[in-house]
Length: 227
Image (cartoon, rainbow, N blue to C red; front, side):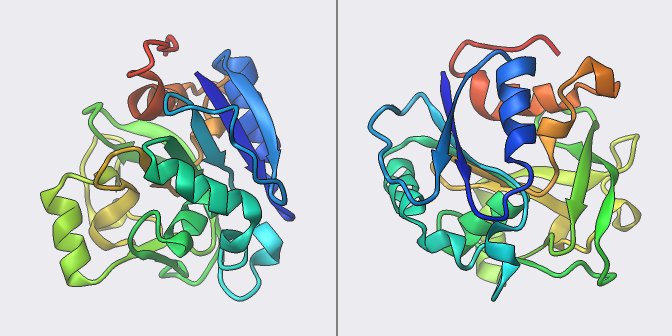
């Protein structure tokens, strides 16, 4: 499996993502500049990654300018053809702005930037400790969209406490239904606010991020990383 990591002006987590994928997970990684548009070297079994950061300085809205980059137009086409796409933090915001994922990321309920470890609950059925670092990570969607997300099981991660309880107290930013990450109805486009790439190294005393990559991307490729 090959990963393409898009680099936008203002990206500041692209190196974190590249390092985690290449060094901690042993995957092939190609850096993609936002002004380029060629994805011919990638197939449906590969994955395009939109990293965190502040693309274009987060002017207008987070991700609102990056969605128009040539590489994003190619990424949209890639996703529509069944290719895998992962957006983390600002990447999640870009996916929502581009229409690849529904909903929007709003300013945190406490109107402050939050940077800390949180716990997530997904299909792994155990709490995963993953860092967050965002000021606009509060997921919101209209009632109809939210009903579809729940019905189609498109909510891939919810904020929980260390014991796995999904409570209001465990919700760091006020996201609807404690949502930390979602996918599209075809389950090939994934977006999440927490940073799994920051929890993949033994030196950090946390490799729960490897579990996230395994669950969302690597499992089907039979390239599971021991975690």
